[in-house]
Length: 257
View 1 (cartoon, rainbow, N blue to C red):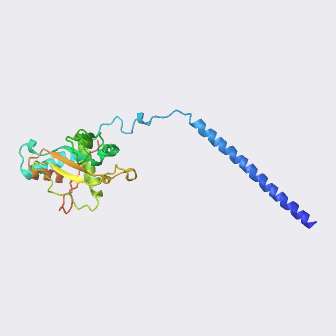
View 2: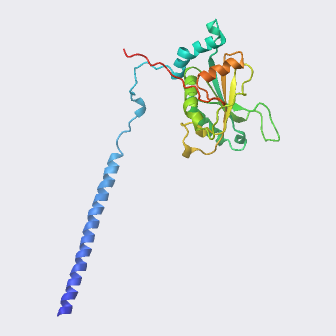
View 3: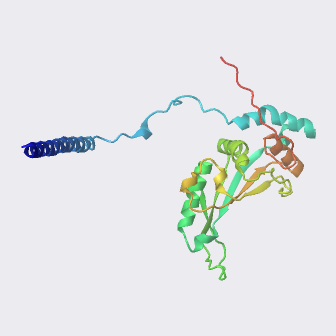
């Protein structure tokens, strides 16, 4: 009798457990079906175009670049005093910034040039121009008219903003940075430097980089002598080698109305 009662108890426990599991599975299945139905119903909604929404600064006047205001308020007077300029047109200023990037491997892999163009567009904020080979070189497998590089020329507000970001953000991110060289002037007031990695710019996502490449950056000024151009770039915050402490541009804030 005792063995029969134990067997009946075990059978009842197993049957109850199976029944509970089936009931729970049925409830879970119903919940999954309800979730799928909700997703299918949600897919029918119309897409919202976020590009047509007005941003917080819509309608407000565009602020002048910070570094340009520093040049007009401080740098011009200091350069006139330092070199004794009597004519305001003699004071040197920044004309344009040119970024040139050559991609020699684009001869065999044209898609690499597309990636470089996209990265330059992110860094500068404008569309680069693709450069073509002027001559055919049989040893390199290069043909005339083949795209082997890209370049960007910045002027105006975009030029000042790029210089501000390059001085304050990009230069400190250079590996083992000890200052920029002072022997890269061309004798006519222009300064050129080479960058080994495009990763120093914060606009580049490290995880999306396929290949590390460098670029040449040229700062074109109206100075007639290298000393004038050096003083101009130094006052704008360019961290040249040998400076104990780089010049930090300080802009006077406008008074509240």
